[in-house]
Image (cartoon, rainbow, N blue to C red):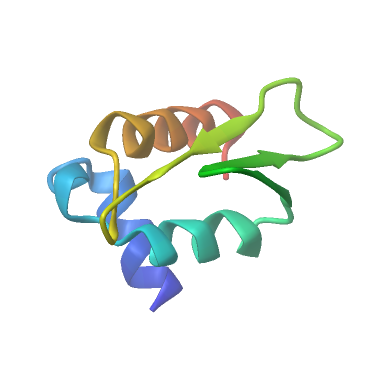
Length: 78
């Protein structure tokens, strides 16, 4: 499932149809630490300056946040 989610996120053609739980699991599978504050899920890795912040929109991820995850994965070659 994570591979399919990765392919969908990286393809960029269905950002509005990524399940929040799937995006969360994908981020965690790349070694990010998770901190939850309210409905903000914050992810950080020691080798990256940037953080990933995502919020659920129902059971889906917000499309602009999926795009931010894709851009960060591309930047770091993940």
